[in-house]
Image (cartoon, rainbow, N blue to C red):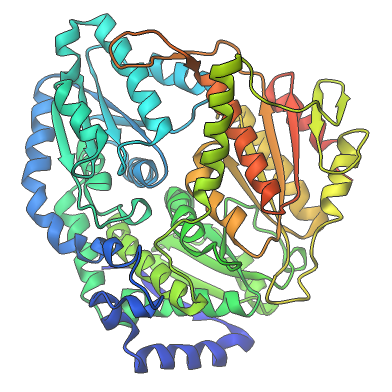
Length: 565
């Protein structure tokens, strides 16, 4: 089953109650389950072929024996860790399952590589002990540039360290039938290829092969996960996610479009999965719900009137109760979801998928497409093509140089402080509900790590305190597969701080999995992705400041922090 849900919506309660009554009277959930595309749009494009997630709790039962046999086989052959190579929906659910449930004794530890930063690639290469690491290549399309780059890098490396013809035995794949990855995997002798239902979009794939294969490798009880999901899917319309979706969609239409997730420590990883699901599904056609994950919980006066707070905890956890009670008392709407135990996550995956589909209907958008994701990809491809032709990326001279920080702004600025003043002066106060209040998104094209994480957290917290803005932090290019859609497709309230840095050794990307040289490296790729995303944001009319750090990331971030106006 899914967790227990309670609502405290204050003055918004009557509006939500009326919206819920309308959804029940029009049989919204039964129509969704019947694949009625008119719930969202008048045409079926990118809807009727994206509703397979509705049937995962039942259909995946038939796939458990195959997954279990695969897990048994790799354990018996001495594999004790698995490195998942994937992005977005292919990586976030496995990462969440690993973090929430840990690793059962005797099963494989799991790490995820979803950063093209050369340092992140090197770190995972060191972690991937030769002979004991299984590589799981996970991509729906079979053509995701980051995933294929990771695959070629690690396949070539594995082939060098063992007999080339046996390298494939260390690899498995999850992909759609007929994808380029399926063909390549079979040609290279992959140990196993799992073919997923092609009617499931990446961000709705947690309960499919994309989530359950890695979950099985770390030792989760997959039958129990699906049992909880079936309970959620077979409950009454409201418990399936209707009520949560109506609250999310209705509150967003009322200007409370910053869904602020307050999770207990044990469930914090679930927030990152929800962030992608909601942001990529709802941020389009000038509308959107901004999921805010990982912010500091503050006193009521620190928040503007654009928040909907949602608490997610395990039964008995009370760490955020006092703060939420104060927010509730100050008139902020609060939703509480309490899980009986960790396996209720299975039910929550289904409930949140349904809720997101419902919210999309209320907002009048298609929650299954991603029309703006391609813009940043196209710009990055153009950057890479230019590099291959000329040997240099087509960057522009910086607007200013201040110590170890170079800056690019669309307006005149003499230094970091002026750049930030110009950015924050463009913040919208939220007086127009159709456009909503601004938020600040920090986009870190940096190597993930504890020191950088702490510095980014301090930066977002200071912005939150001084400007009363909702803040988000995302590592690039990871966020391009989640919040990147919302950044370009919502009502344009985002203020963007892009941070790039020196990458050191660049780590060549093989042109082919087995030899053949290299015309690109990870250092060039991540910078091309940053430059491409900046161009896509500017073309969409979004204000964006880029800072390039020529010193260690945490020092550069602290330098930016010290200049905040």
